[in-house]
Image 1: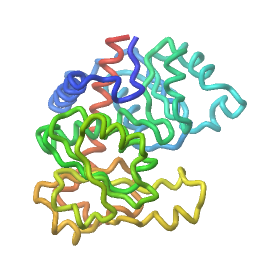
Image 2: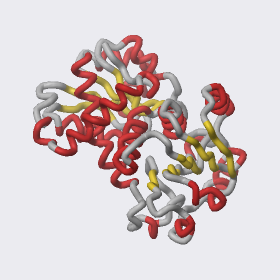
Image 3: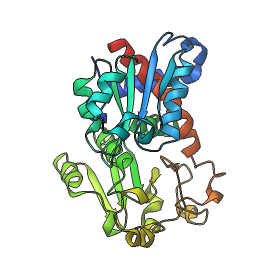
Image 4: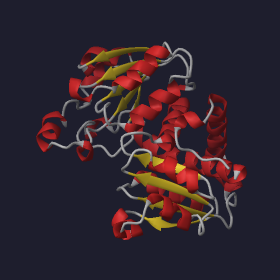
Length: 303
């Protein structure tokens, strides 16, 4: 049985295969309309979500399957004290695969150890978000035509941003990729990830000023400062507007820059940027549905 807990569970060749399958689904969706007939996806979301939960459900419905689940912990037996492991054992009796989001890092790994059906990590705390990373990779590939030889700027909350952590892990395995890490000192990339970059001899620079580096970027990945990860409201309020991307700031950027954002956004991308052809974040959302269709097909096949 195959699970997806960490983006590094997938070899680069497997990622490339998922990208190819996603492209084919986008090109001819009708060919996949019955790809998961009679199959059930359980979406177990112990933490709020719009895009991830709905894109999983949309993906499964688009494949001819069905969905069940819950959108918050209070509507599950977790409110009564049931463990994640027991919840998974129960739900695996009702579904053919499970997408799990949980605020505790490592919860999907625990789920995979006890599940009789494939488990997909739909985000665990500030740790990992592999299906968002697949969405990001598909988007970059469709926008730039490659995943190699790119300068990727990551801006905002790099300390708690699980999407950033997953994307760095995935793209570090492609040759010629350089990261530009833009954040206030309090939200810089965790030391353990910097050590991994150093060990893998992946090029990166750090900056506190987006204006100083935007002109050299091929991809700009903006992130929100995540209020829910802060223990101190004053710290959040002080840091939440550290970076705001505006149309004026894009004057110094490359004409073919691709701007991504995992969403939701708060104030870090001004609405005036939305109509710029370089703004790829709503195309990124659309890609998320199709890449999850591809992943569901592969996991059902492996299961």
